[in-house]
Amino acid sequence: MFPGASLPGLSGDEVQRAMANITRRSGDLPKPALEALRRGDLIGAITAVRREQGVGFKEAKVLVETYVASQPALKKKMEKVVADAQRKFTRWMIGFVIVAAGIALVVAWRLSTSQG
Image (cartoon, rainbow, N blue to C red):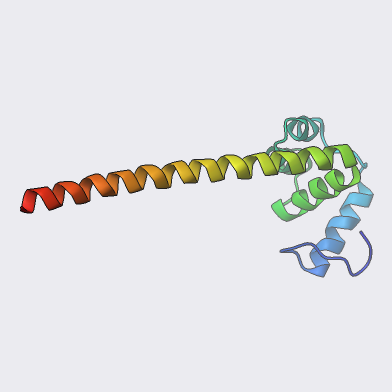
């Protein structure tokens, strides 16, 4: 990142502090964080960085996102994981809506037949 850069949800000062901490530390993430990223678990990686390096959520998130952005293959994998999760969620929601509509039709049908 460069001066004046920003990340969503972080102020310029927070980004600069996080970037300063990144340059003070080695470029590698802790082993548990790397293992979580290999599994496609971004949240697990952030949690591992917080636990291993004793930093807050925002700083850990910046560290992990910066590392992912610096690794093109890992970035592509994470984008694929997110896209797969979004597809699964969409399918689940469609199924839920279909089941809910079916239940609503059955209830409406029973109410209409019990009144007549």
